[in-house]
Image (cartoon, rainbow, N blue to C red; front, side, top):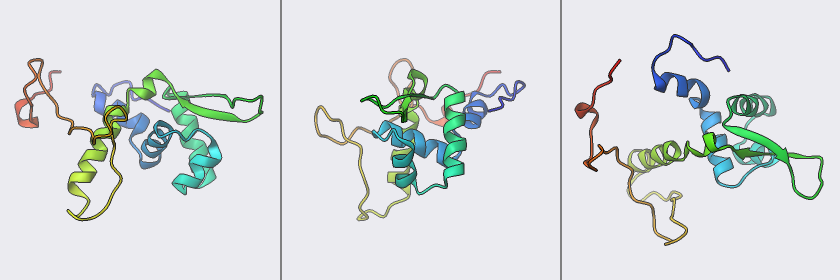
Length: 143
């Protein structure tokens, strides 16, 4: 992974790490409990070389780590680091945007639920420090 040192935009740097389809879907699947290479490959339907490359990038970036599979097996599994776990809001935001804009009203799709309540999670919104909802037009980038 190459970070563009002169890139002062946090979005650009983040996209350099997790900005492609496979990386985001790998992070999603690891969050959903898939940890082994074969399980990830089967679920994603991705070629081995692409999965190997993206896993290496995510490990090198500190988003994922490898650890031995329990039970003394020689196999390794992929787990989220705390840095990787902090991508949860991004995955939720992409999910909710997809639910809102990419499915017909009556088209079935998976939903994300709160395991404590069994309810679908509330829509994510950007808020200011007072809890008021913000729109892009009400923000500015300070350089």
